[in-house]
Figure 1 (tube, rainbow, N blue to C red):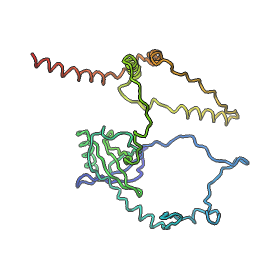
Figure 2: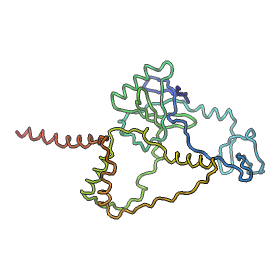
Figure 3: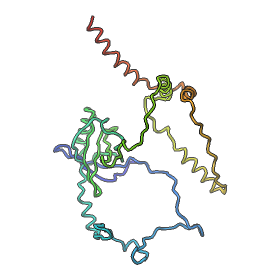
Figure 4: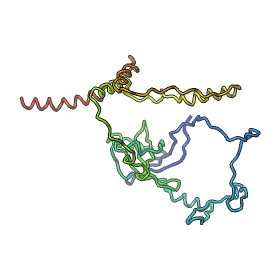
Length: 288
């Protein structure tokens, strides 16, 4: 079933304007939700708006939106005025610079949206996608929508483009606030064993489809038992062993996840070794 567009945006690339459509990247969630019920008769509860001045229950049609410009003082905005504020947003993705893809740390990514070409923009859409693919660069832009200006990154994705909504620098807590003790020096033998364990469970590619939400499946199983009239009981937590000897724990871990069908991701290490050996070979040939 084709995805339904949730909005439109225009990519501004120099003097080129590229009309696009936005699509959500999230699949409809099957999360388990609980409703609030009255313990007396099991009926579902509903929320109400209560006036803090007269204690009256206020129906939704008698509510208005207001902005608190001073403590306890509000300026009331009509529906038309709210629309006028929303109209300030231009829905334009104004590309301001291009940077290497690795320069945008995943820490800054908050949300992602697929971007598809809108009518009449197919050629320009393909052009900006291919140009970024050839240069290995991603676009950084400002994007105003829903009464706020966002910073976004734009990059090629499959046959099209994907837009990542980024956090502003002031919205990211600095690492310096994390309390860090003086870390001990790692012994070469410990490091060697740790690298062996990593290589045992390493893959060349990431396959997200193999990961399942086992917690949700277990919750669904328990809820089904409750529906059938059975009681849900708390399972005793498995005792967690304390690591006394790091070397012994590493040795015991080695081989636990070995799989003959797995191809360890040795490419990165091999390339690193080749990079170190190549300059030495060149230097030796020059001396001769």
